[in-house]
Image (cartoon, rainbow, N blue to C red; front, side):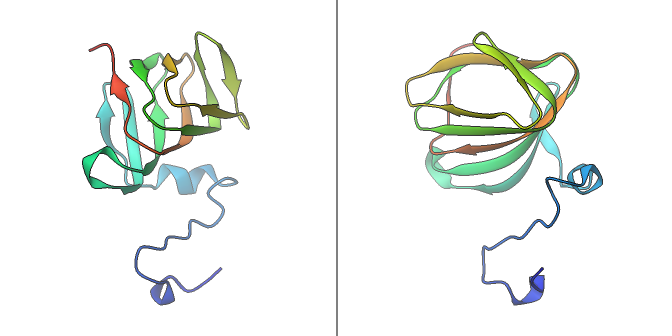
Length: 124
């Protein structure tokens, strides 16, 4: 693993983040929506590209929304679902621009999300 002091500005290295739940638990978790927290890797102004880990509490959901750009979701712990399926650990979901869904997690989960553009919320 590289020395983090020598990394170029803006570069992040999260060693063993896929293999070590304790490292994920130690991230800087912030309020995102009721029952859902985010640990942001980056965000750009004006709804541009962004990436974050999202942590859903059991029973939490994100209301129906439309994807303006591509969204990639990699489920790291637990599982989440939408009206199209149930996605356990290790599932990669790619939502195309124009697609819509409502996401929930019965048992709670942590997922890595990468957005090309911010989503458009369709429900409050």
